[in-house]
Image 1 (tube, helix red, strand yellow):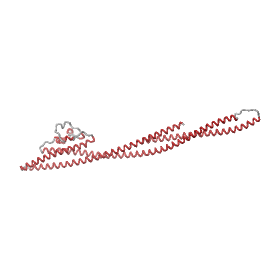
Image 2 (cartoon, rainbow, N blue to C red):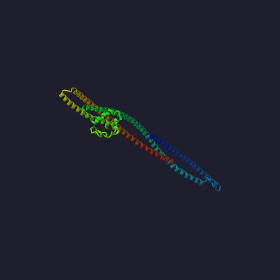
Image 3 (cartoon, helix red, strand yellow):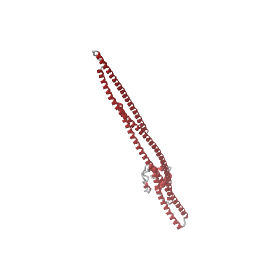
Image 4 (cartoon, rainbow, N blue to C red):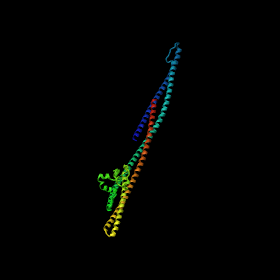
Length: 387
């Protein structure tokens, strides 16, 4: 913008210089016409004096002829003066024609000068208006740029808060999943059953995988943070389980953490299913024990302990389910807020960019037209100079 302004000012200065040169050329033409007019007046005066002198000489010659019979050639005689008069008249005619030609050229130059002057004055006013408009547009664009930068900072802050809450939720889900695995293992031990392989693997990793790099490397691919790939032969010998069907392909960097949270939620659901089955099995076993105790009237203490343990497990399950629902709602709300803010900012940025590009194209076209007018004016000035 500043460069275009400087170029317009330089074009205006060149036009003013060309106007000054045209004024100088016109003043020179006027001086020439005045000198020619003075010369013509002088020639006319000389011609009139010569005519009077020739008349006087004719009278003297007549008197001399009357007085004497001899004839003497006089350089100021009528014939010689007549020849000189004819020559002076022809020169005066030529000077008149030249004067007419110069007057016509002067008038044409004067009219062109007035036209060019009016056009240049209008161009100067137009350029001033355009410069003012360009300054207004530039100020508006600066203000819009600062506004967009502020909005971008706000959206970045919102995205940072969402990312922080997402990481906190991810840590809570990992801890909750480890607790579920521990609880599942405890229930299986109480039932004297062998736990599921996947649940046991996660239980073992929950103990040592967080602190050791080997444990993090052995973690299930769904639980690996940020899309780390697992050992391909890790699950080759184990039986298929519902969790193994939830394996997904690696995702891009900007979707790794949300997908990791979703996978953790899926794992927790599967763990809850396994835990529910184990609790149901425990309930069934406890009923069998109660039936056998009622028949034998023994084992009241074991019955009460089992019932208390079942109640504790059920209350723990309900609490964990409420925590999962709360975390899911928080994650969905943060995700929707960030996506809407980013989409709005992107659309605003694209619209402003298109408007700025269109304005710059119009200004470049106007500058090109002004340069062409300046070139035309310089060619006219060169033509006037040659004349």
